[in-house]
Length: 249
Image (cartoon, rainbow, N blue to C red):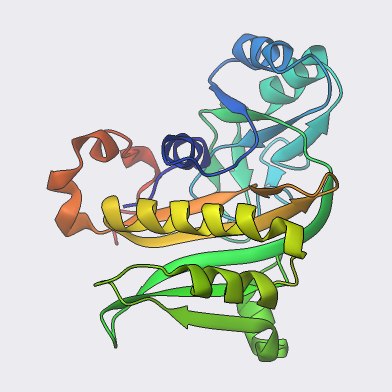
């Protein structure tokens, strides 16, 4: 089972993962209020569908981009009004596209670097494996194909969990500065706890960003869950959006 980005953000906040503040909106007026509540300055309005490539997507009526950086609540209202109840077509949706029923209004982030961080369940070893790269914000499959040396893997023993030395090793591989190690270690540990306790099959943060102020935040998230374990998580099951699921899967 997949969930929307705004729902993934709610889970990350629950587990103490550093992420920009944001609010979901289902009307243009709600988006305007959300932007005002975030300070009234620059915010990001992001279409909420179960597909990647939203920023480069095109709406059925010709409106360009399912992710917009806007400078005021009025602009947030306008952007949300163009996105909501409109069909967004991306390279992952196919030509039929997906209807946008909600948008995420989030505070803008001044980005220094974009990284990639994911936790997957390795079926071969039955262990979680962390996949990380200095090349974030892009299609990780392309990175794996063109520059596989820029992707690192760290297998975690589920009996003892993610160890501090592993987090520090990953931080070093991601070329983080010494002063950022503690924050990175906390973020990695929080994501691992979320992954294990929520019975995830995948937690993907793309991008994981280093901000200009030196902080580290999970900017965009994609979560998958083990369907066979959902009976243990009624709160997560309530996040299911049947409208976004492909009946063929």
